Length: 196
Image (cartoon, one colour):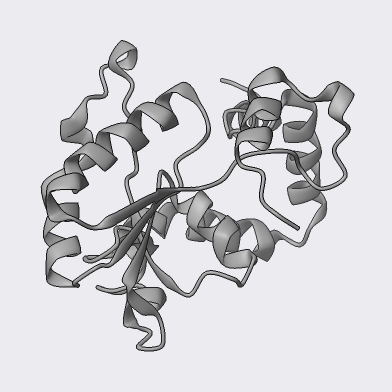
């Protein structure tokens, strides 16, 4: 029988971005907390799949049929931002500058990993663009090989609908040093320059 602390550390270390040392710190934190904290945490984890589902419209995670963004009448339904993951949507929302709606793909094209166009559910996206009379689609997939391939594929699929299709800009982070910037990022920053 495995030691319970070792088992907890092993499970926690399987979380993304959590190494063995961080997992151990988390396990000892749970042990040091009152027992009801561990019970509440365990219950929340065990019920998460039953209590959360994908929004019927944008596919973001929600506990209702529609997420709060899709229910918000103040959001611009004609401006649609496509993201790869719910975490990307949350990052854009933290900026409080985008007031349109979203569409979450939950996948990126990756033929080497067996992820093809069928994983993107393009028909549902196209139907949504038509029904909501979307005027602009912003493709905010990651600036990676898979993200770029997905962006190009989606732009091609959206072209027959004659909707404006844009891609998020890429470039240097605020406070970034030019000498430490990779060539692709630097080239994109130069290509995307604007007047001041």
